[in-house]
Image (cartoon, rainbow, N blue to C red):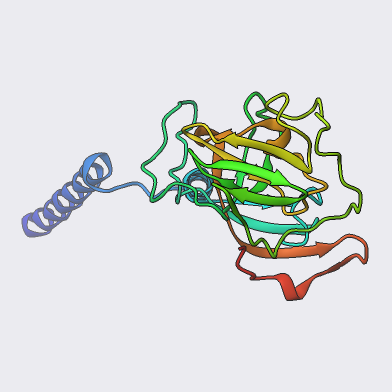
Length: 242
């Protein structure tokens, strides 16, 4: 009898020690398993943070809303804007990340005009800081040299008179849309023009654009939709923007 009682006592002691070890493990050593809802929430939040970081500092999608860059860019084109190249602006500050380079003549860029944070524009850089620009009978000259611009488009046969001072022109008295300047591009600013020169709200009207207002460089078309025929323009998808 004494032997059986001792065996029962040993088993009870072992069971008690196992239960105590289990309680200690649950209190300290073991990591409780996350619920499926919490795991999915963390995955979604992580993906959202990465998306916002990428969109803010690297690439941003943009849709062409008007005809001002025809025939280089068409209404219904969807493209990616490289924000990293010029140094993306840090949100809620006037600071920018270090730029790989500044905009060059010929770059097609996305920007805001001073005083207009709502409307985003896309134009071609035709003048850099210090350049002297003039537009004579629809021919652009930079520092006295006529420019070869095979990408430009003109939809009006008429020409403004060389002596006509269009009140919309900026700076005042600089001429009109066909005979403009000469003007010197101020330091830290860039002169923008649309490739569709007769149908473009550009620096002839709005003035040169500060570097701080430039968002990035248009790089590649990822989709294009023909609104007139309601079908995709498959031949344009993947085109590098020049």
